[in-house]
Image (cartoon, rainbow, N blue to C red; front, side, top):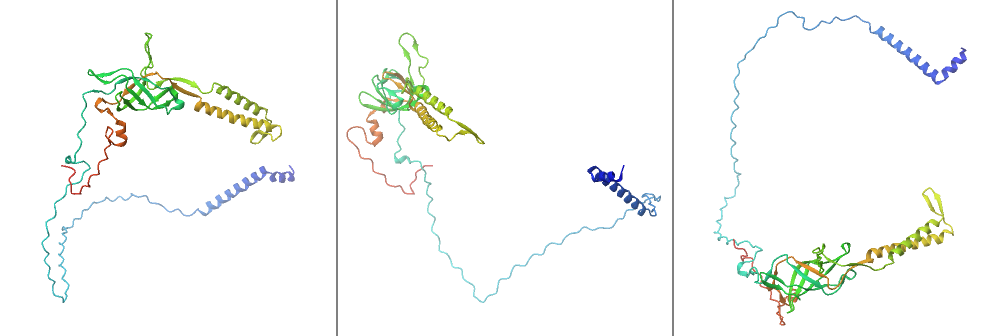
Length: 361
């Protein structure tokens, strides 16, 4: 091997690594030799512990001790009064205090028995208990498109209890309607008013139930007694679905005919004159299809209950015949008594003093 080749080898990475290893190993050898030469001195003998052969002797030293009793603390002398030249002040005698007033009874929100508490109302002789079914029949047509139309009906069968006639047939029934399109029915409110042929009125809480009875010996229907008045679903526009399909189809066709170009954000419509009519038609048809869909969801279907529909009124309270009076709703709204004469409202009572006992313990 030539010297030049050896020098070129040491210039490479492998040669440099080999040269570093040789130099580092030589340095370690030199350092080890120097350390061994400096550390070679006379050895000091070390005597191990516990080599004393003398026996150990245990000695006990006792010293007299006395208990310590701390001395009791000395009482502190009372502080001396300050010396002043002023004569001692005479203590003035306070006059006798009057006896305290008698404690008042606490004021309560309960009315006093002497204030005229009304006695609880007693049940009349003619009544019907909770949960009666009053058979009725509608007089006017009700549909969900005009939900403000009231439910007006007539009682078709007499309601008896304990051998007494409570609600005769021909009594008017008045209530409010509520939309229930999902079940193809019209629901009724919970507040109803009965009007007798003699003019008496009675407010009731009841629920309208469907009555399904067939007179051709088929008996009661499976939906008899279910909540709401079952009617017929009617479409407001028979061509609405076809219009929606056509508008959606033409909008998709206009989008397909539009020229596209690829960008880093995806394909977009090319800004050319040929795409202008297609994009305009696509947007117009999309808006038109959306409006048709909203109209179908809002007004596309409605439920109609014709006149003559039979239903039940499920009463949620006790029906007391004595509560039916002439002008009952007028009395509830204005506070006047029944009859043609009107009575002015009562004057407000005088305010009670704080000393008045409102609660008897």
